Structures are given as structure tokens and as C-alpha cells.
Image (cartoon, rainbow, N blue to C red; front, side, top):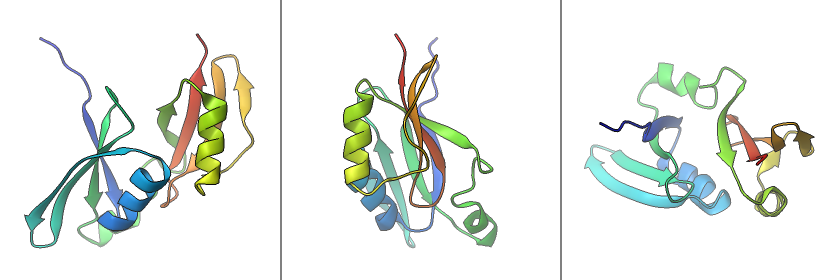
Length: 129
């Protein structure tokens, strides 16, 4: 038996603005965008082959809307690995992605924290080795 974390639901305010960011700026692939009726859609994106997928889940009520952009409680909770930190950092910066710090070179790799369009914090990281 094989198990793996395949998909994470990420709360968003609006499907199309989320797609503009994740596909348009981060360069994620659109895997699925299916109309479910009554204004709901099944929208799945992925950073690349073999990577985890994100279900862009539009907030359905006030409680969920309050959590948009704060699913990690203000901490970095999403990690975007790269094998070319310098190129991806430059590409994302040119696309308008907001980095919260200059790149750092730590014992575990090169890293810089950025925010998505809602304020969720991510590490762009090229692990050592």
C-alpha cells in the first residue's frame, strides 16, 4: 500500500483572482477547473510534475473568509522547492510576487519568504544537496 499527501485545500476569496496569482504569477499548472453548479468550482493547481496539488477552495461563509490568508497563523506554512533558486527568485520578483526578505543562505539551503495574494507565507527554497 502506498500513501502520500496528494492535495491541500487552500482557502481563497475568488477563484479567478487566485488563478491569476497561482497560474499567472507563480507559474503553477492548472490541473482542473470544473463548474460544480451554484457558483462552486473544483479548481486544482500544481507547481509541477510530481508535486502536491492545491484545491483552490472559495470561502463559503464568514468564518472561512476570516481564515483566507491566515491558514498558517502568520507563519510560513507552505514550502515551494526549486532546483534553481536564483532564477526562480528573479522570475517571481519580476512577476510581482512580494518577497518579505532578501535571499538567505542557511545550512539547509537558499531561502526567501514571500506572500501569496492573500498574505499566506511561503518559503521559496532550494535545499542543499
